[in-house]
Length: 435
Image 1 (cartoon, rainbow, N blue to C red):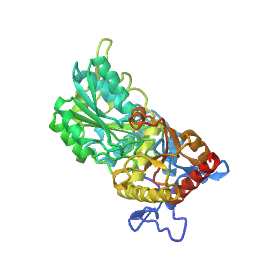
Image 2: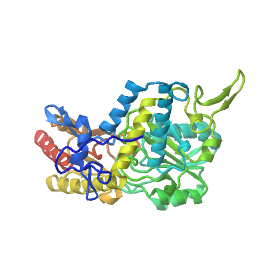
Image 3: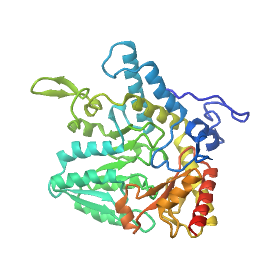
Image 4: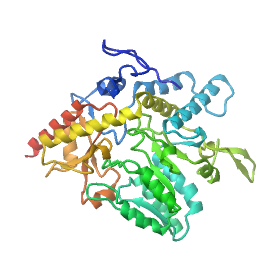
């Protein structure tokens, strides 16, 4: 699968493989150029240019991804792994090429270890149902953290209730850092599984996943990492991390909704029973027995969202062309700029999570004193600024911080310093309205 690079649109844009059509200049990502790839960013909201600062919820889609979906439906819409006619074979080839792209994106040893799912939530549930119900018994411990998204909490609650297991939690400091000293103590319980987020969707905290994985393995536990907020923002190498399961969504990494993946070590996938039953996950079916397909198809029952899978591959290729190191540095610079701009204009603003840009992804949760986050978001929306308001699917984390809700601004490759300036101006308007 390849990503079509639009030709340069200005005299200063020189298209080459080194600078990805002017999107990378002197080793730095140029968001003003990158954002031209995202048609929605040329639209308006309430008569103002759209300032999209809710990428942690879902990302916008570049033309390369939109075109991949359009091409599939226009030119070779056919089911995968079935038809031996031309467009059927083209559909299968494109779908499996997308899987290979995703494998390269996270440096998986083999594309056969990449199971396509609808999102990170389904990927985590797959592990909970297939691996968990075979391996968690009465009294077995599962260690989670206080900052988990509900998707990496509720499946384990259900499993623990069903199997009579125990859940334990790594606490956080007041500035959103995991207490690894407590983690070390919890590991003496000899847990079967440790599951934690790579990057917090609410606080932006980047957790030390390599160290935590090593600690868990030394205690005899398997490790599942929720990478939904990591793969769009930081380089991810599942082999270097060393985890056993790594789950992520596509829609947060510029891909279509309804796309995602679970990576897991081959020996684990081969030992796990199917998650769902039906077409494509079988090799042979008889009236009273069946034989399962090879991995990864053993876990992909029924007709998949083929277009979404192809779009996920296109998004992975696009991000690899940008270079995830460039993406990470761009967001780190945005964080530094945002902290300075917000602190200068609004020193009373309540910010949460680590204030060191090296320790967090492009997420800034905040509260305006005396104003409910929903009111903040509504006023910002009048200026075309889109932010999230609520508990961000992390209710236990908000309880830990003694907060009912927060507003959250989150970045992506298309976010510019002008977007942050618009956020700062919007907060000024919030204060004016609410006195």
